[in-house]
Length: 302
Image 1 (cartoon, rainbow, N blue to C red):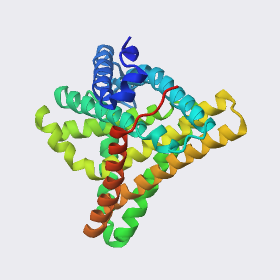
Image 2 (spheres, rainbow, N blue to C red):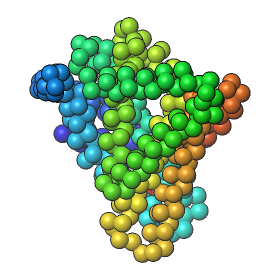
Image 3 (cartoon, rainbow, N blue to C red):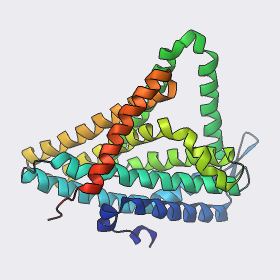
């Protein structure tokens, strides 16, 4: 039932609807996973799997809707390419990134809220991953004198490009496969924010620390996932060569834009002051352009 609460036409007109839908979806998944209270014992250590089940129960209904959404987007892509629609690329995909970003933000806020409200051991799996990431970040800082600024940038960029590649490949192979990466990363970030927040109303303020480099990085992953999903849907529908090439070209544009976003995110995270300022200006100029074209443009659905 939850996967049917939103319709394609509704989110096309109002992408922000994805935020409360994702918030509700993941909250139900988290509350349901609490009822399992499943733990495993490995080498004398106890592992609480509630965090893992919460991700799984969020993914299941999400995959159904996002698969339908991707198929509809690919169908619209096909029609626009077939009639040589001139402003095709932006009119076809300007809303996609906003829709998925609102979905990601809804998941992140949900996990942050419940991580702040529930006992510390509830999201043990995510907490372990957060500790691993913080340890790597600490090692980078300790070795920054040897690595220098460029070395830190290369490490961050290499890691983020790896995630981007996984998002593209997973979506290419499984259609809406990027949802696995989206939900997992949202759960990790949300748990981290929730643990840093002293109270639930501190969550928005704490989140601001992650926005400058977080939005470009997440946006890059999402664009790569959308690109892979479009190719996957096109292959399944077995189009003519010219339409197939058109869809693939659109998907590669999305992937290229995603890589650019990831690159800018890495510069913002590790670069010097001027590089941060320039990168923030470039990314948010593009981002504002996406938002304004989304608000002012309409795409024919026939």
